[in-house]
Length: 228
Image (cartoon, rainbow, N blue to C red):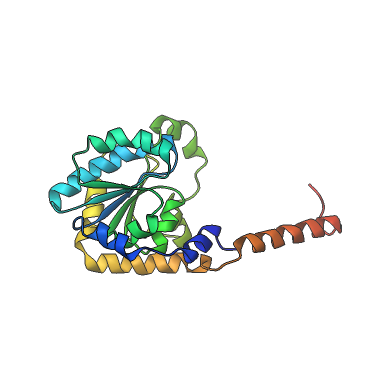
């Protein structure tokens, strides 16, 4: 049926001057998107900043714009950012400009990965949930080889994902470095992201969903399908 997020993104316009300001802050531009909920930011952002610190050693001119969704998230994130020692800037409500400017995105798992995919940007998907909770409960229910939305849509791994938890940042740093150092891999990833989301880039997702539900209700009401 599509996805309503893309209707919003298709209608979005970007401030070219804001894009230029972000790009002028350093090179490469490595955007950080730690999620929109406080507990997710608390779990994900520290690891993202540790990865960023390692990347800053390899790329001394790097700048790290950080997307914070709301004041509650900002309150959680600020202590981590202030003590990171990195070249950072904090952004709210301008993901379009930040992602347009970015060369790579460190992104928490979730809907944000679809937003990054819309901009065809190479990304590394991260999440760091409870290992104990995963082994006690979640692993018994998982039936998909991929956990990030873009890889699920593609049916294969097109972006590196490190979730539901990770033991070391070293593989994450390695994946990010490989993406930053390979224009060919960047181009391939952009093309694969475009292909993965192409079926969703059409308006009317809510209308189509409502039409399907109304049709189901009409079918049930007519007695064509036995009730359960």
